[in-house]
Length: 268
Image (cartoon, rainbow, N blue to C red; front, side, top):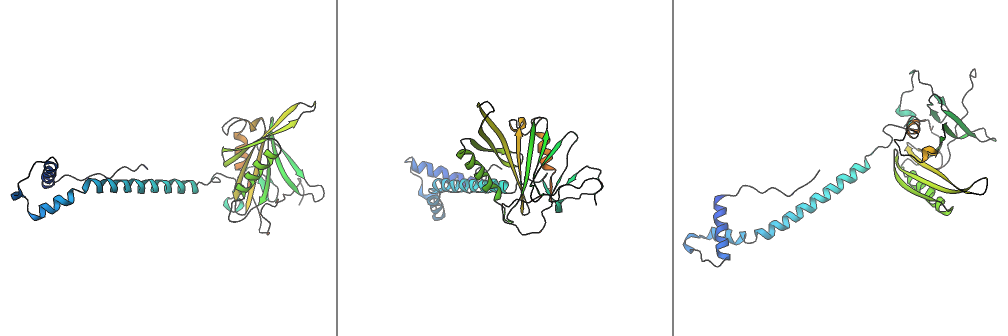
């Protein structure tokens, strides 16, 4: 909303006459005292200060309007729900018999599409799944789930950590607008098999839910395109369709929430 100056009212003929008398007096033209009673003289004296008072009032109105506009913009920024279209908490959706193929990893439910590959990073000692990577063509999206404080704010901390680590490793990391809020665009130096200088490019998304945080790291060719690029948009949709089943176990913010291996066909 754009605020303008307050609109002035309709000029009264009597006030117009007083204004004419003021101008005449200012220009040195003597007005007839007979036509000025005490009330008119007082009004004339008050009117002499009107231009300065109007200017001050208008300036105050402009400052008030600018403050209101700044507050509206701040409120608009605060109410943006980056998870409005997912990823979701299990309490926010109904996973009924909708004939959609999903893979249940315990704390995380994924919805693949035909032709998508899934790779699970498994801790050999505990058999817990630490991350899942969706692979399609020459790109991938690695997803990990973490505990987060109920008050939020973990995403901002993790972004700062990623930027700092990248710079310490001789690379770069910058923040940019992404489909889930601010994303980190990271470039790390990497030595090739023949000793040549290569670069590892990735984009990192963060989504915070009720006491959980999802981190998605986009790799390969898709890490170079924007959110609407043909290689990127399927991964955006995959990330949006994730459903988190955190559970009520107390955990330290930032602690990895493990997933479980999916049940094989025929298992109880």
